[in-house]
Image (cartoon, rainbow, N blue to C red; front, side, top):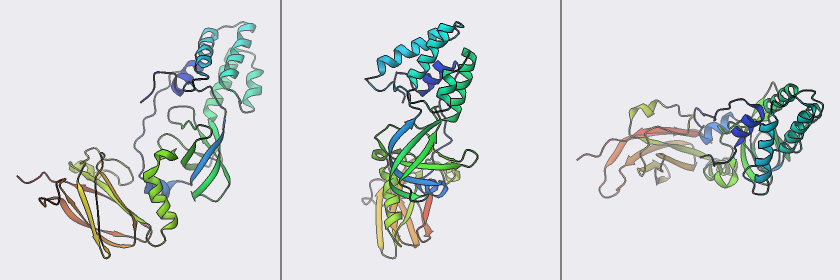
Length: 310
């Protein structure tokens, strides 16, 4: 949920005068899918962000942000030389540490139209974050990595000094790694479920597989691609049990109808689901299913829960 202050969307609307719309993601990939399709997966602390911008969430700069964006609004359309100079100053104030060649181009812009064109180029180029790498799960063993993200709400606004779990893909045309809001990139503090899988994948040896999935109340969810980390009709609190050669494990589905088992060896697993008051009385919620897990594999299943027999 957006706070009632200027976000990156408002920032772009103020500076460009163009309507910018919130990001709509088709869906977020599961952790397994994200690891398999990402070119780099790592834990890193954001060392620098370029170009930086005044942060409206920062109490120290909130008043300056408000004053400066009001100045930009007032000066936009002013054709005088003095107005252009003040507009340049406002742009530079809102974008401290502006990357070259944009800073020089902005300073030497002859008209407000040129200034706007330069800024649009800056926005399209995006924002670069340099990370000090703590641990790499995929994509090499560099001590520092640069990742780009755009300025819109589909980008990811990294905070200097914060530590993140980053999923990035290579943009071959631009020769750079990129990430965004629709990826599984998140603050490390919010990445618990991903870290459990990544830790075992890195250190679990032969027992590093994952068996995960969802329990649904509607057959339409059975058709949802297993790559995505959501269903439309989740059933929460369902008891899920797996039986295999070494014994059994169990868990309950969460608010999104999700369940997961980590640290599994290759082999066959029998999944059974029961209504939430299991084991008293014992009432199957869905038909048992046998899943074969490959070495270091990751399997996702969607199970249809039947209404309780009356």
